[in-house]
Length: 459
Image (tube, rainbow, N blue to C red; front, side, top):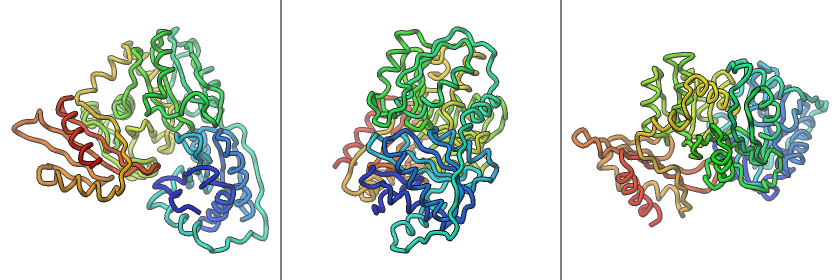
């Protein structure tokens, strides 16, 4: 078994080379051994390897005496809702998915009762140790049983529409929604039926684990070509792009411009603060300085966090955060047990636009007050050595250094604030990459610092 499949906040790898049925079966037994659950809920995405992995996982669980409720094809937000709404009936939940990764990958997202994710520092190390060991995991003398729940989608949609009241009939707006051949195709038909009057152009709604049209990753600009063209050509008020399991969502304004994930965090955070002023809003450490500034101005308390759903959900619980967002376009809601939902994010965007009666481009571009590089990825020989070299180069002039997630350095000047800038370099938790983000007050300064860092990293 490949030890590398155990990530910071999920289990993920090439399927079936690294993630295969024997791994899934042993995972079921390992979870039963470590957590002694009575009931577990299991869902899966549309990847070609998912049905066999789900079957093997369930075999391992029921052989260990566990009752398994299968909810079948579902988005990750639906799965999280099923865990959360059970109010502790489900001791564990397992979602078979590789999220936004390409078709060759698959994996498992693990959560405890109350949608508490299992990740680094919260159980993943123990699972890894047991999984890769030679310790036999014996069958339970009494086999568990399998139940089915086919009604999760309806209950999930009712829950999020109860949170954001929408009009009985929308203006004759048009929006384009790209499901990327992922699980959005299961949720969106029923979701859009509730948006009476809204004209929706569907793009790639048929679930297909081979992703025949494009990779389902809204963070990559090349995956947004069709939805951007559709928005402009059809005069849409905005466009939406989901990832494979729908836990990430990107928005494109009416001009066809993708909105950066950190500025979406600011936009959505500001909207939610209308309901609960003074609440804590989390943002990941790759985000623009604009984000905490916007949250503070809107009467909220900004709090920086690590990258990754297991980390941010833990911090939301600890700080009683109302909402959190990442540059990677994960958006977390306390009203959904701190879980993500691109569908709920879309409802808040629609509500905001109905109230403000302004183009989406106007609403978000006011927040773009700095020049941000976006995330740049590198393959390096040694991630630790590279980060050490970067730190040594800038340590003497940095005004603030953080090791919250990788290395973040800030450079502020009281005499020349126009020269202020920061960067973060960190190892990816899902891919063998080093990731860099740079921001400065001007595009010229940002490009200068970015060039210097790229030269240093690639040396």
